Image (cartoon, one colour):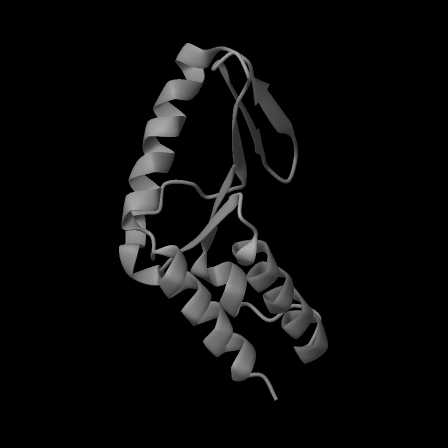
Length: 117
């Protein structure tokens, strides 16, 4: 399973022109249709409750241990200690609870795609 929460700014900040944005929206919609994915959007309205400012990846391994990878413009950090990753996982679950549902997220992305010229 892949669970992804995107900040609304990822959808609304124009990058590369309309054709590029259309292709990005189409890819997100395709991703959301896959049987092993959950795609949610964290809307602007959650304000400071948005827990992460940079990309964070949290992995649950086959033995149920946790790993995380976080990156900034300067470096990446891989954490292999499950006890250190657990608070980030809890924060991620709280973000998921505040984010739009997958259906509402897909509807938002679809609307943004349709609004392109």
